Length: 430
Image (tube, rainbow, N blue to C red; front, side, top):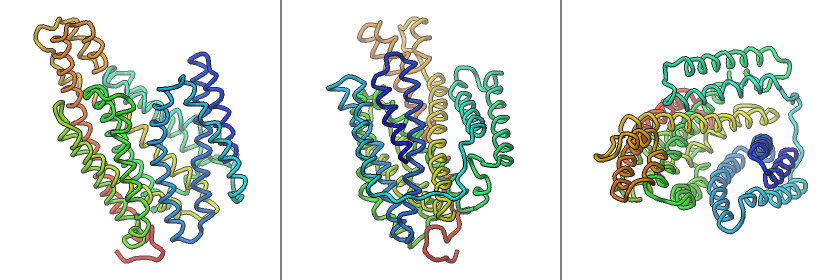
């Protein structure tokens, strides 16, 4: 945790002082390394500090709540800083926060260590990162390149080879990055997979809705962040503190199942009722449902993952927990963006009176349509933007339906695969 905070603080300073895009990209990469060290460590410390099941359950719920709050406070703080300061302020603000965290961590946090902790597994990191990068690139670029082209199929094939290489290496490595034997535990593997799939649905839907608010509804970036994240965080603060007691009664299996069902319902509501003319009320209801699902399944699935291993292996479980969330988020953005891009091109119809050149440019994406509309008169621009908005929201609807199906799949899988005793202090029937 200390190393991660130091790396994060130094990288924030480097990013603030960057003079070229390459320097900024390198600093942001190091920021990612620091965050990757911090997040799993915080969760494993929570499990180590609270051995009592009831207290640990509440602590994990509040840990999940702080994660949700951070996803709201971060964009809001960044947007506010950019109104009054230069862009480097969004990195400089991290430094005092890191210093405070280092001091408080040194004063209040106990020392804990996995007796079987391993060295950094560079081959495993390269193989796993390469496999995920190839999958994401193929999904993102497929609408432009074509799903059956050599480039797309080659990228998927390369991802499969790298993934197979990762599994083979981890099985034979003396000190593997990911102990694959942990995945044999049905509670851990089922909860991790359910979380990955649920995060795919949540992130995909929210990614497109945030874009739609800005590109179709005319919200500012800060306004879109408040409109999407504000209701979600409000529901999180109301619901998450109450989830531990409910989980203790019904078990993690049904909490995860109910949460995934709520995410599916939210995706359907958002996708079905969002049109060019619709207001904010239906989105507000959808966001509340999404937050209810998030508040329900995230603490329950996190606890199911963390309690599936002995306390001394909590660091490994915490890393798996964080990895599942990040993979789900990355895949959710890539898949939803790809679906929306393909649907946009299929549904965009150029208005009458627009030249073929403008129609061709506007039919590529909604951002291309906005750029093309700037060179038109008021009537022509309005017509192009309306057609682009309808095409974009057609993609949102299709992606939301697919996200709902994905979330329902996670619910069914969780109900069948997660043990009934998960999340309870004592075994339960059924």
